[in-house]
Image (tube, rainbow, N blue to C red; front, side, top):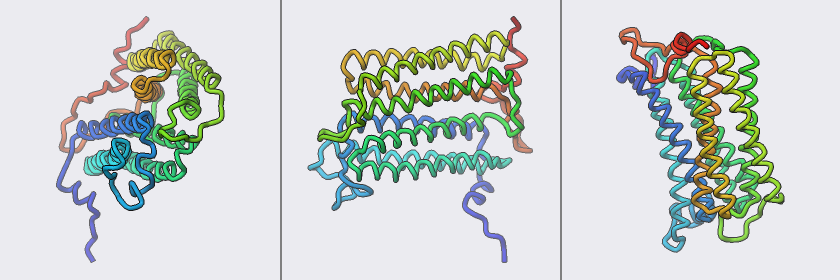
Length: 333
């Protein structure tokens, strides 16, 4: 009985994407994950969280919103449809990573990891609707999307590097400082969901249960963690300079500091203006940029060699500088 090829193997026999294409496909999943966060925030800020009254249908009688539901139904349903667009981009990456020779199982596994997080979060979003926007479930819904963004960023990084054993570019205390920065930023994100859950933007025009916390106090705790993250970022940059680390990690920290400055502006503006919807949305967008930058700082502290090339393919220059080159070109001080 002849061996039966699965569809991905059949595609791999007929299509050989370039390493650059795989990188761009991975980056597209990062962009789509950010869009999902921002549009999810738009659903909440436009009071469209229950624009569709049930799940998986929009109403008990209709899969799509009706004219009587108005703009809120369209916004909520549109956000649901974006999940399919996200899955299409993830599928494109999985197919490209599988078709690329040599096959890198680590990339396809990360792609499938993205897919299953999306599927799980879609079901979780349905539970959020069926429970009338329970604030704890809404917070978990956002954190699951952040987990998706994390895997997407890791996938993007892995698409730009090889499969060698990770080689540390800095001493262990420096890496521990970077991990502390990641942990503090993660805590900042979790506290941010508590601020949102206790705040005035409940996600629907009707009375919705809120997290029973003093909004002013939890906001102050959020601000305190902002200062901790900023302090750790500055400390990381000076430490990298002191140990003469490669240029790439130092550049990643500067990018992070720039995002933190922008996010700080959004945060203070929304606080002093009474949480206008547009500025709150920009603040959510800024939170995704900060998380991406923090992850990139951590990932820049190790090297896994160049991207594997096909046997009949000339080595192509990578879009991101290989860490080995960064080590060689690091200025001495």
